[in-house]
Image (tube, rainbow, N blue to C red; front, top):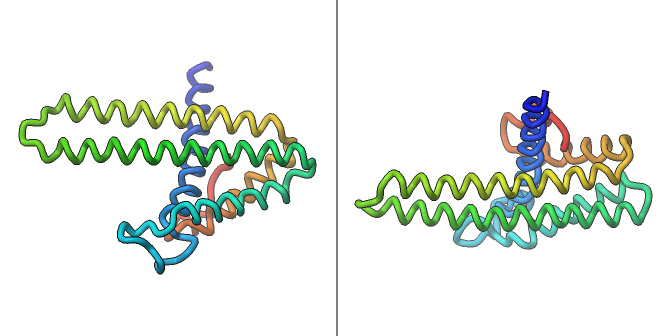
Length: 175
């Protein structure tokens, strides 16, 4: 029973992490602005794109949460989640940089790769756990109806940013 609950929480964490990551990454990748105006790395103006994503989430919160004070608190949590995703993204890039550097080394051992991969995975789990905590904090503030409306709105937003077969599936699950 406890194992089942832990597995459910991990699945919910993974779903939320994927959802928030998709929203953050799609804005960082410039999906919202098309293929033009990108920098040399193909990312374009990531901060502006993230800002647009946060603005879209703010509008969704304002639309679904009727109490202005509660909406303000939920928007603050959304911003905390975005900040966590940004930090995790930067940390993951650093771990990948270390892996690339290690890959160049002829003398690199499997243990060195494993150490970095363990750190990378532990970092992802810590970040996902923090996001899960924020998710529950947000959920506790909202009524069941508000939570349902917010989740449905996020599923619709996520569907707009998917490219290919995932959009056709209609977005599974909520936050």
